[in-house]
Image 1 (cartoon, one colour):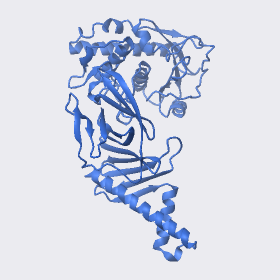
Image 2 (cartoon, rainbow, N blue to C red):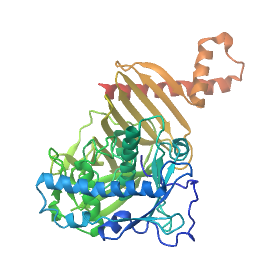
Image 3 (tube, rainbow, N blue to C red):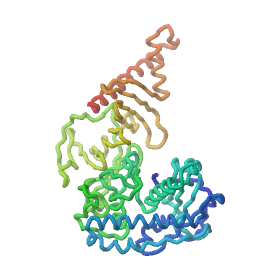
Image 4 (cartoon, helix red, strand yellow):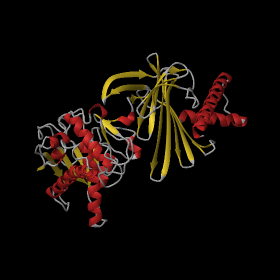
Length: 463
């Protein structure tokens, strides 16, 4: 699971700053200590009735931390590239951990809890909790107690997989499974999906090896391969990294810190050389992009992909490539006109295509999203101010022909649907002043026309 960053009520004697006077791993990361040859101090908490003692759990965790680094060493050696990573190999071989009792200074606190308690706190059976804004906070790793209904062998295998995944977070890696990798992409993540421990598998793969090497280089200030970077350890990958950043992502990175605002970072040789913030310009009406719009490509990257183009109205369009899709942003006169995101991935055996379009309509940042899952398409329309709750949303379910077969509406849309029913059945129409009825009628037709525009846009994307 992704590392949690919020304030959470923690159980089993959460240490105070007085009890732990040393800085937590937010001030000096665990990986940094490992690379310096310093022991990482681990405190383990369990309930009194647990079958294992804290020290027994620590011995497992010590083994799992060392397995992370030994696995990366093995992947490097099997690739025959020992000379290329000769500076890191001795550092990865001297990993040390140290068991400390509750209340003693620790770099990470591991809590073994019943799964139901962790579900309430994490929304999953395990998580890694950090607080970047509090340098004195000691990170916490929450792991589930073994399930007594399973065999001992299955219990140990499940616990190991869970612990290795959370240890990956403690070293600085993000989730890599399809539903999460596009939500919080790291600078050092690859451009492909690999079936490793940070995805949904139980093994440490070449993708995790890439990530750990990149993180180590970032912490040590190493520019491996210079401005050309170094090639991925994954045998069939075309990816290579420059100062910890995948070159396949292109020279620009687009992010949206909150609705209606986009940040465009420009990279050169893996370093950010400029950053520009754009707010969405207000549009008088519905403005989703015409899929057949012609662009004039102004600049391509090393993979012959467009990274800057010019639209029909003179706007500059910047591209970011990530994982299984792209993000592009159109800007003109210091403002963003629209942004568009396309992603494709698999959830198990189900292929998923997701297309999102962002613009500002009548003063409100608006998102339009079409998600194709199997034989059905789901169309979301959402209006949300920069700060606050959504003010209008609706979901339309479409079949393979682009016909609406289901709706889920907010209160405002339901009121309009009720008005439509009353207009179709005059005998049931409420008695109201003529002026009010005309205003409602006009609003209804405007909404109906707008909804038809949504459907037309979706049908173009479906085709």
